[in-house]
Length: 341
Image 1 (cartoon, rainbow, N blue to C red):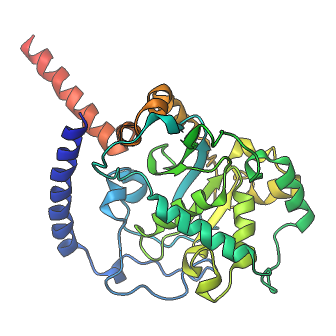
Image 2 (image 1 turned 90 degrees about the vertical axis):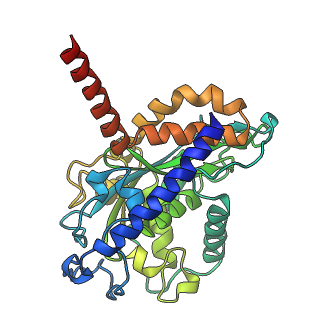
Image 3 (image 1 turned 135 degrees about the vertical axis):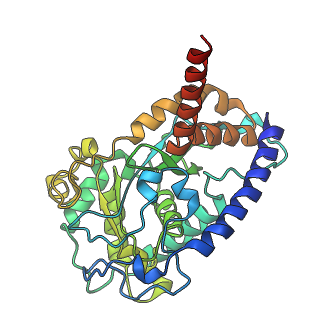
């Protein structure tokens, strides 16, 4: 099955390359698709002529409803262009005794480990520097400390999966507001760390137009936002995220997790209290874990390539485009059967 999938991916890659080349010749002028946005969160410099004016086809094939638009640049008061949610499951882990296998292909849903580790190094380097003098925290420092002590996901020392038994201790997912997985990242630390969420968001921005805005819902989004605010400077070398990305990103806490945080955080980060987020709750990622739970016993004891292979296919089956194609095929089969009867 895996050799067939490798061959299928190779053919699909050539097909996508041809479609992308044709699509590039049909893209309208960038000026027609940009929104004049004077909000403080908007990108301060105009995009280059050859910049993306639409979301990359990789995203639009996963969820055309979220990434198939042509107009971007909504301010956060009006609602961001794209809503995503992030979360980690420590059930999808991989035993270090399962062994390895020859590398056949890199599943497109997974972020490379080197990219995640590079983000982790940037976070460590940024946290060693003193806070930005001009930074005015959204909440007092003692509230942040209380939240970090009380909320389990924020505790870097909290061991949720034994590193002595598992080399991959979990999986973090980034999904759109229709519960479709966009990107995944293997978690290889005993606890949940900020580098996974930041890497996924940074990677997503590389496929978006240069004025697209994102609202990210994460159960510890308040703490990640606080970290980014403290170290954000005009000097790119000292930032965890590039300034142009940080300006186009806001955080909120997943609706049901918001009640576990300090009241000061709830007022600012509860999606139902934050202007522009409306009824977005960010809890759809739990439904993704429910759909993938049938793979837990399989992926835990499989070799690494098979583990990623299974999760990749399960994630692909969740995509809106794939489901629409499958539903159309099933409908045509039903119609043909009725006509023959």
